Image (cartoon, rainbow, N blue to C red; front, side, top):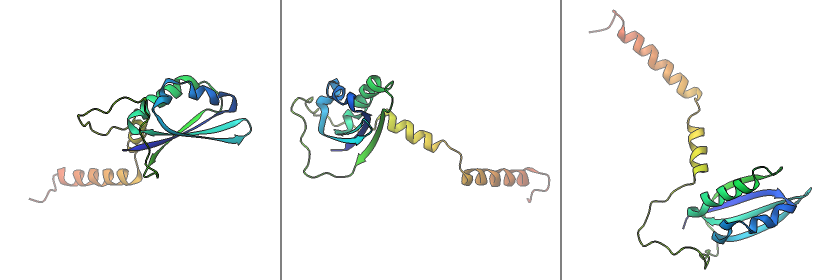
Length: 140
């Protein structure tokens, strides 16, 4: 089972609102830590399939709250192995491909779309090579 750790920083007075979100039934485990200065860190251990729904619920509820921040981390391993929540949806018999959340996909594409020095140098070398081979002084 692929897992994600969602870390949420919210004002201390907004912590109880997280438990009221419909997505919280899919949470495998939860930890709350007081950060001081009226902020709280809430950690949610969730199955990768529920990540996108939880992030959508958090964003719609807290995006306008000052000090709100969400960090999404992959979980390599955890002991003891988490149990599925009792009230979660029954598992489908048909296996589906593992899927990452929209936010993870956006972050991956954004990082990959940046032009690096290496890419620019290779592109420049390719252009120079094309100029050399397309002129009249080609070697036959």
